[in-house]
Structure formats: C-alpha cells, structure tokens
Image (cartoon, rainbow, N blue to C red; front, side):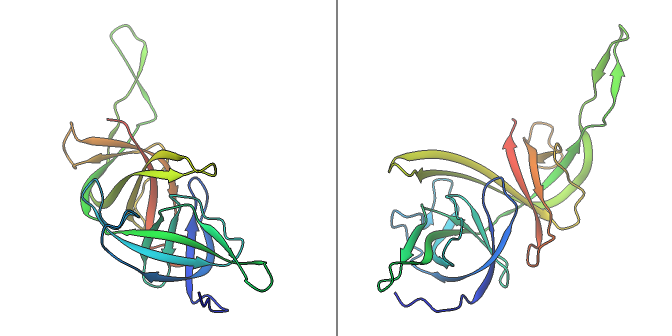
Length: 215
C-alpha cells in the first residue's frame, strides 16, 4: 500500500474514558454493503458504511474508540483491533491501520433531568431525596447504542455495550444529569450521564456524552 508521507486529514481520537487526542490521518470509504466487517445495516437497523483509516505510527486506538474528521464533522467507530504496519525495507513501524464504521445519527427530542441537590422532609421529619426535575425540555439530541464483538489480544471476542449521546454545543448538561427519551414521557427511556466531553478542541462541534441506561 502506498502510504503518503504526510497525513492529510486532521482528526481527533477519543478512546473510551479518555480525552480527545488531536492528530492526522488518511480516511477513505470502502464498501457500504454488509460484508461481515460492520457495513450495511447493523442489528439495530442503523445504516453504517465501512471506512479505512491510516494513522501515524504509535497512534493509540482502542476498539470502539471514536474518530472525528475535523473538516467534515463526520464521526467514526473503530470497528476492529487496529494493526501496526511496518516498512518493508526498514522493518520499523510505518503506520497504524484501522477498520472504521460511520454511523448516521437520527435526531430525537430529549429532556435533561437534574437533581435539586436538596432533601424534603417526610411525615416523620426524616429527610428524603427529591425526585429529579426537568432541567431542560425539548432538546434536539442523538443517541447511539452500539453492541459489538470486540477482538481481544488473545484472539477471543468480547461483547461490549456502549451508549453515546450528542447534544448541541452550549447545552447546560453535566455529569450526574439524566437524559429522558422521548421528551415529556414519564415512562420514557432514561440514561445517566457518566461523562461530558466539551467542544473545546477545533472541530468538536457537539457535546459528547457517555451514557448508561437506567430504565
């Protein structure tokens, strides 16, 4: 494979539980059909396309990490265990190659719930926690639930469940809040917010939320 000496596209790499790392890569789209590597429609019916990413040697990419193409705003999942490729002449690491999936987000309307940080007294005078109240109503969001068989270093497969949400930049949401889908429905799905990645880096256009389903 002819790998250019300079990587053309600025990207951000976000490994699970870590902050975004700016770098550069070469990304191109392969087959969009279902070929066993994640293309086509997944088990939840979400349309996905298969891409290949080539990253500088030493790049740290974990399965289910996210990659943001800064210029286009397109998000990718790392769909398989990345491989380090070596120069045929020197034997030194030349680049890291990873199979990527891109997910087309479907917008939903959600409520952001927040605890009042106070307690009420019951009939006996004991303090009881207050019920989370609607902090923000009717916010446009996207929530992606991903279940994948991730290869491990010992060639085994491990099932990983990841829920990621996106909210518009500037939305007042913080760790410990809850996201309710659909908005206004007391019996709607509720996710707890485990982490919020602020759009402080160039190209990170939306707030990114690590979520856990609670209902």
